[in-house]
Image (cartoon, rainbow, N blue to C red; front, side, top):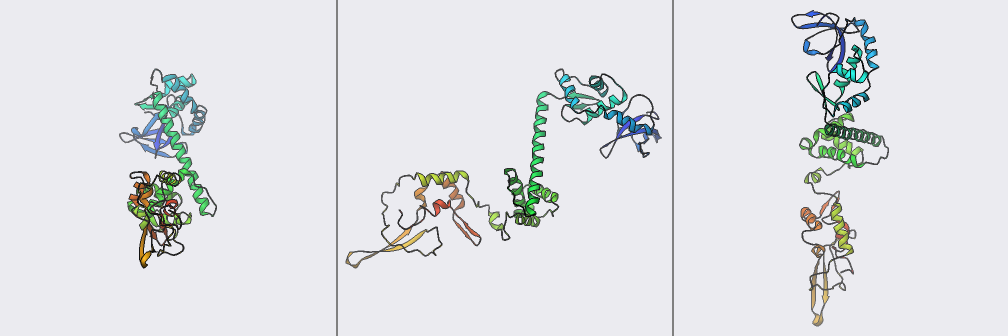
Length: 354
C-alpha cells in the first residue's frame, strides 16, 4: 500500500474511509479520516482499497458525495436477475460495469457497498460475490417478512401495554397472548420459567425490573391478574377454563343426550329431598329423602348425582374430567370438574328434574 491510498476499514463494525499516511511498524499503517482523526490499523482491518489516484483526507467528503449518487439498493436485484441463471460470480469492478456501464473509482466503490451490504441476493466468496439460487432468495424473503411481522406485532403489543398502564382500555390481539403467557410464566415459576429470557426482554423494553415480582405487578397493573392471584394453583397447572372441544361435547350432551342404558333407575322426583348446602349452591351432589310406607314403615333414600350418565368413556369430556379429578373449592372461586352448564344442570340434583 502506498501513501495517499484511499481505503475503507471497519471500526466497531462501522464503515470508515481514510487516507494511508505512513507505515507504522512492520505491518500497520497510520490512516487519517476526513476529520483528521488518525488510526494505526493492520492490513486485515482494511476491507476495500479504492483504485486510482492518490487522495487527500480533505477530498473524502466529495468522494463520498459522488458515491452516494450511485447507491440504489433496488439495482442489486436487477443485477441478480441478470446473473442468477448462469450462476456467474462478480467482483465490485465487474458489478460497476454491469450497473453503470463504467468503472470509475466512485462507481466501483458504490458497487462494493451494494454487494457487501446485501444479505439477500449475493453471498461473498473470497473477493467475489455469487448470486444466490432463486429458491434460497425466496426463502430468505419469507424469513425477512416473518421477522418484520414479528417486530410489528411486538411494537403494537408494547404500545397496547403502555396505553393500558396509562389507564386506557385496550383490546388484546391474538398475537399478544403468547407474550402475556411468558410474562405469566415468569411471575409464576421465576427462575424455572420457560422462555424466561423473552419475558425479561419485554420487561427491559418497558423499563421495568427483570424479576418475577415485576412481572406479577405488571400483570396486576394490566388488570389481567388480581392482587391475590393464586400462584400455587397456577403452578399445579390445573386449567381454569375448558377447551373448545370439551365445550362442544358438553353442548352435545345437553342437546342430544344418549339414552340411559340403566333400566333400573327410579323416578323419585315426587319425594322431598334435603341437602346440606346453602341457597347459593349450584352443584348439588347428594341429598336425603324419607318415604312413608304402609304399616308405619319408613324408607330413607340417599340420592347421589351420577355424572357418568352423560359421559361416553374415552371422549374429550371424560378424559378432561379424569385429568381434573375433582371440583376445586378455593377462597378465590370454584374450578369445576365439568363445564358449568353440565355440572349445575343435568349432572346436579335439581328439584323436579330427572
